[in-house]
Image (cartoon, rainbow, N blue to C red; front, top):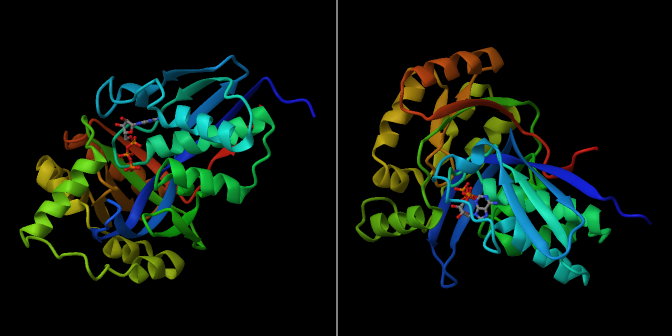
Amino acid sequence: MRTPDAVTARAPAKINAHLAVGPLRPDGFHELRTVYLAVSLFDTVTVRAGDGLSLALTGEGAEAAGGPDAVPTDNRNLVWRAAELLADHAGVRADATLEIAKSIPAAAGLAGGSADAAAALVALDALWGTRADRDDLLALAAQLGSDVPFSVLGGVALGTGRGEQLTPVLARRSWHWVLGIAGEGLSTPSVYAELDRLRAEGRVPDGRTLLPAEPVLAALRTGPAAALGTALANDLQAPALGLRPALRRALRAATDAGALGALVSGSGPTVAALAEDEPAAVRLAAAMAGEGVFRTVRVVAGPVAGARVVPG
Ligand code: ATP
């Protein structure tokens, strides 16, 4: 079969409607119980036939949160690592030019790097004709990072283990959110380290009993938006607020502006604010933008599908 000359795939950002973090495990990871929701903010990755690997980065997200140097363009980039991993797995040469068009800001708690890795796996699988099935892709994704399998899967899912073990959740409707994006990113490891510090000092619960995800799952299944707004929970919010006190004002700005609920997304610093419906989200976005605490605000909806080839 002839393989294509170029393939483009896109993958969504995620928010965690629920994120319960257990104690630090001996392997250096934390046990998680999280509810992922894929939202309509996408990065795209275009791959072309090449000799060896090369990587270029374009798009507004490339220079956003974290500064222009936050996203590496060498073999530290998750897209590059995805290419090497898939080539190795499939026994083909890692030959491709890789281009990431970033809309998802880096180091924002929106799994932008994971989305890029997921899109790269799907695009390169098509370019190289390696025909990995979904389970293969999910297993490779888990080797790249805890959030990458969800970026492949999309939709809504319960994540356990370090977040990579997924159970899809049926969502009966779409939810409308406003993302309040800060000017500077937060490093995920530093937020976990701050959580461990707060726990060692007894300033937050120790996480031995993981906060149950049922209230959020029930609200996603049957609830009015207000029930989901009340159920949102994130153990990383306290350490993110500790490292970035201005986030407290950002959360207040979202609730003052009429959000049904607001929380720090993942390790932050993005604030995800829930609205009743799309017109309410547009109004909420305008009000949040007017507070002057966010670099930018985006109206998104979810669940949306995971990493997919974009028909050319
Ligand atoms: P998560 O929510 O999964 O914890 P995040 O959204 O906070 O992650 P990412 O945007 O995934 O953060 O990036 C975290 C770090 O990963 C960046 O600061 C950067 O150094 C590195 N990185 C590697 N590859 C990429 C990529 N393709 N896009 C963004 N960051 C990348």
